[in-house]
Picture 1 (tube, rainbow, N blue to C red):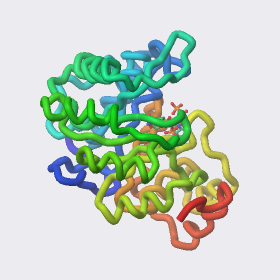
Picture 2 (tube, rainbow, N blue to C red):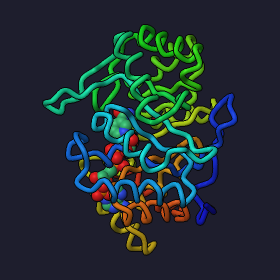
Picture 3 (cartoon, rainbow, N blue to C red):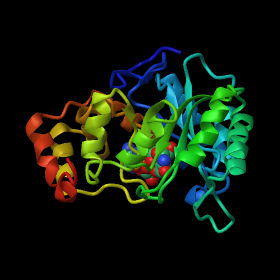
Picture 4 (tube, rainbow, N blue to C red):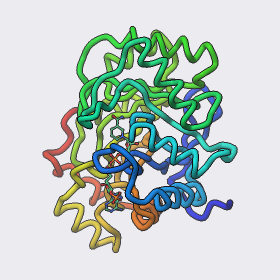
Length: 295
Ligand SMILES: NC(=O)c1ccc[n+]([C@@H]2O[C@H](COP(=O)([O-])OP(=O)(O)OC[C@H]3O[C@@H](n4cnc5c(N)ncnc54)[C@H](OP(=O)(O)O)[C@@H]3O)[C@@H](O)[C@H]2O)c1
């Protein structure tokens, strides 16, 4: 299928040949309410995935704990056998009990089982990129990640994983991880209103490591800001497009994985890659959410 639109240019993950379009797709919204159980309309979820890939998106962020299992099974149903160059980026480190909470699953057995669950439900022999997810639901919590990461590094040596990334980590935890194995990407909470990682992003950019913000549109509580509304009106765009365009312009190592269950929102989000924000507008966004929290 031919790529129709500019997806923000490409970024090559460090040390490897995977060239990712900067605009990707986050699959978490494809499961049922609260990311639990099946969606109301599986065919609609399949259509969104197929449209994303047809538009040229070449990385999908997922996890086997979305659903659980459901999201990966829908991805497999929609896209398997996968097109050459389509990169699945999954994550391990959590599980979903029946009360729908998010609980750590970082023991050796839980991590090994999670990798095998991802392989089976995605229909793959090897996972392209696995993020080790630690910390709280919204932010990192300090502490060693050596034990769980060592398990994943072992699975990488066995050939079940090609590359490793981290999610919900601090700069100190990244440094600890890089002494154990190569880390190609970091996935933390970041958006125009939540700027805690500003300094971290700049540091990762200098080192060529990808930064993949989760909740780029605010997640379960979508971004609302008069500055975004005004910018959108001035550019004849939507506030969500402005929020995504801002991220693409923020730093060249930022890759986007906006999540949507809607084909209409997918198209809107893809068009954000072509939106140019003037410098004075970008400067104005520093007031959203109290401005940069750490630079
Ligand atoms: N590492 C982690 O701990 C972690 C945590 C959370 C998420 N993630 C990953 O990050 C990805 C992105 O995060 P997310 O999906 O939670 O949050 P998000 O991308 O910030 O926002 C998703 C929400 O915005 C809505 N939306 C999407 N496009 C829209 C548009 N153009 N206009 C209006 N509303 C729009 C979606 O609803 P509709 O479905 O109605 O479009 C959904 O409610 C996830 O898919 C997941 O892969 C990782």
